Length: 583
Image (cartoon, rainbow, N blue to C red; front, side, top):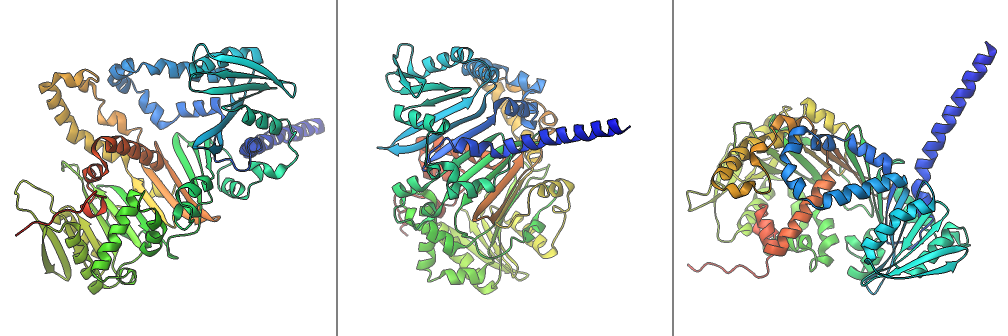
């Protein structure tokens, strides 16, 4: 009996030791990679375990949606036309074969606007087996017939390939493979890896900003990114007074969490938002058909001052500068703004099942009705100098509605100011209903199980919160756009050349894989921590939208893109002032 007890205790200790070792290995992985990089490294990307990440990806909700038979049937044509698909799949299989660990790529410095780049990974197997794969990658990068030479350095053989545009140097160091676009960078990397560097304080792992950023990151992740923006700040903001100049570090991680993607972003910088709590009281404006809710603390005086120095190079800075000009022309100070409104800006969008399109409103809490009423009038008339606004008062609420001479224009922007809230929308009906809900403090949306479950999946927000019900949004889009697409395909058969519109998956096939996206932000550890979780995250959605906007902006120009998204004219930068209409 005693032997059995001793055996069980030993087994528990062994298992516990293994679990602890794995935990420590995961926790110190990014630090170990950072010890291979110089202290002034501008940016680096780290993938701790490619095979584990790939397995987690295959269990994710978005991948399961992709593998649905109906979705694969719908994508058959575009996938067949995607010539890069096989190449990507082959590369992924090769990386899986290498069992790559701690893969990283880093920009160590910048000279004459040319980055110096290093990278590497740990591999399984012999160097000869690995070289068979690396040789193919090298040929694809520098060309089939590069100038090639080998030099000796500290008992290592460094292979240098010079192509038409690029030069890369590669070397094996035990079970590590390293690569750089400059020989001196690769030698320095080898010195750090082999422990020949005496000054440990010159390593990125000892940098205070890096250590503070990594302290806010999860210990286990699929991918991590770190940026030290002082080099960019010195280039674009030498006065160090705007937001870019005050950012000490930016770090981000992505991991898979029970099929969902979970992002964490840390921006080390001084606090800009006011010393106020995010109340989320505006959640009472929601209904059972609300699919989007976002609320954020707003301090115009600090945030305008932060971006003002970059107004010349930033669309946001230009837009905010226009706001200050509007306030100045009306003799309204920032003190008047803060006296009129609370610090919380909210946006909500509803889409009832019987409506073809959604309705959206934005809301500010009102502290001073008289001042809020005056400010609403100023911004309404400044948004479009040629527009006519009808102002009325009903039941203690002041309404401003834009009048249109055309009966075909459905949108009639409306602003309503009560003693509790200022609410703006694109039609009078949605604004009036929102005003009614603001008086009743409805819990119809806030008490829904879908919202409550999603909101509780992240830490309590202190600065920003967002919620998007993807399933509701997709089902409404499907009901509205499917008949239009089917009719278009019938009259324009060429629409089916790249995709068979008759094979669009049913809404229930898609929505069963779509949970809500939720995002939460707080200030802690000397910076802003933003977390987002969902089938895709809010950060990834934002990056995709920015990329699409940039591509569209190259064709149409930024003002056209912004107006296409419904941004008011006074918030979108324009190259020249709009001429006034002569009477």
